[in-house]
Length: 131
Image (cartoon, rainbow, N blue to C red; front, side, top):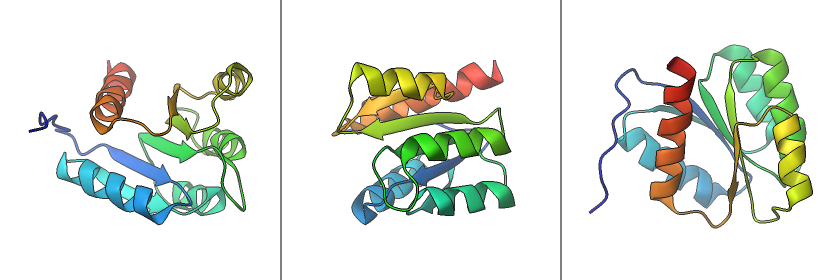
């Protein structure tokens, strides 16, 4: 049984990943926890979503067609400097993590990631933003 973590103020989360299974899984689980979730299959779609509405946090894959994670991070931060961005990757190196941090990411996740760890990281990043 997984612990229920609440999102009392319906924080908006944008999930950006070219893998449909990951988008669907994260959208389902985060919605179940009370978050307002939108998905995008690549960075350009994420940028278009961020131009339409405000998100509190984005989780983006690093390697995607059309627009990769670092470029997506920079574009999202240009639209809304206050957005918290987590970068997920199966290709994490110290150099990539440094590039993510210097681009404004609030963290990186190594794929495959544990959902409970992800949920705790999201809650931590969102509470740090509002606190």
